[in-house]
Image (cartoon, rainbow, N blue to C red; front, side, top):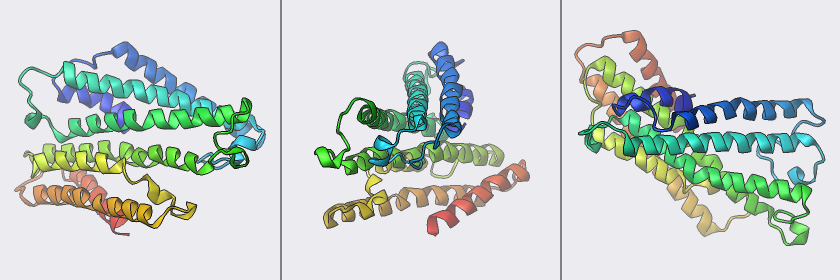
Amino acid sequence: GLFGGIGNYLFPILLGSSDVIYPRVNLFSLLLQPVAFGLVISALYLELGSGTGWTLYPPLSTSISSLGVDFIIFGLLASGVASSLSAINFITTFTATKVVGLTADRILPTAWSILFTAFLLLISLPVVTSVFLMVFLDRHYNTMFFEASNSGDPVLYQHLFWFFGHPEVYILILPAFGIISLIISCFSSKEVFGNQTMILAMASIALLGCLVWGHHMYTSGLEVDTRGFFTTTTILIALPTGNKIFNWVSTLQCVDSIKSLGVVMLAILFIINFVIGGVT
């Protein structure tokens, strides 16, 4: 919703463009989403459903006979294609259609957040698409990518899945960061405090978010050095995140009057909730 919905509405406006550069591709990606959702939901009505949990871990996902797993795989593949098309559309729109004279330092953090999200999608979606295709081949064409008894590696699936799974967290939250920055900026009638550091913080979060997938796999037998690396990079994400909280709070502190207290209160509640979640 934030990336594909609000992003489609706000991104061209923030760049001074009339529309995304490929509107028909944009429509096609929109039409793919109901197909994807329909396939995933249909799996609930088949025998055993997916029957493997939401992560589709092998060997259960490769051995269970339910068609629900296949429906989920194809649904996720369709959704991945739609998201990839939107990401390509946004990146190309940013580079080719922004208004003349709109330099990087004048682009709002909201537009940058959508751009960083698009890059995260392009980095992570091909990986998870490949791993779902490998599961499908294991299920129906006797390949042994994840079959431990035939030199396959089920832990490889975990690495590839979580390489997508953790950036997906930031794919969801980065546009929200941009929206909160826009709300605070608009209703306080001033630029967000430390505007450039806000953009740098979002870029750092996007980069570090691609390097921490292993903290979902501490029980899978990772070596001590590997666990240390993933623990360190996970803690490092707190630095740019804390910077964003500081910028938002500093902006609100420096305001004499707020136009719409109700809307800003929603942003403040988001910040409080986010801090509580981050601390705990």
